[in-house]
Length: 220
Image (cartoon, rainbow, N blue to C red; front, side):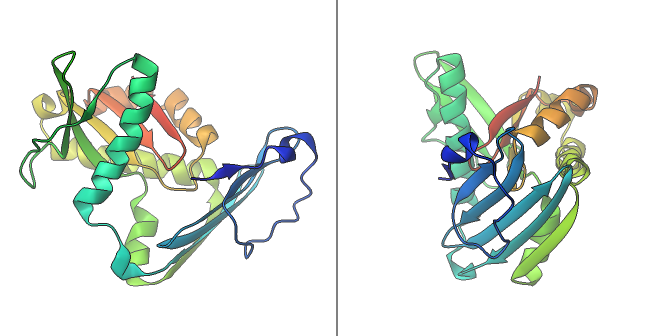
């Protein structure tokens, strides 16, 4: 899990971190403005630098053979989501021992036995562009307006799933967007504040962004 360097909140950050530096952290300056994100694991090295509304990202894949099977990756996303959902709503949802068949409209079922309720969950990556490129190579770099990049990616992901299913099917689904590491609270807040009508038209019961350490409800 990413570590927040709290001491940077009390002293000015002087933009001394380089894209090549290796550590896990979210760095903000004394005004609370996001400056750097680093995330390193057995599977990747990710770095992002933020300057005003501009982002510069670099992702390096490692140990491709160790990438998670699709289902296991989906379950990790669902567990992150359920942790926040249960905390916010006082529920006790867990992943059900009985799951739908592969290629079903539902990816994962969660249940709260005490309530007698279940959640039908569909999962999609929040940003397909870097993943497509990473399949072909080991390094992906991009830069530009952070809000445009992330806003368009999230919108693209929701639209792709919305077009795939009927209105009846979508009305019973919670859509989880498996969050790209460069997306932070400021980005999800911007999307939530500007795209409520678009997300309503998409037809899903709920839409959530589920990142490694940013898990937020986008709709409703």
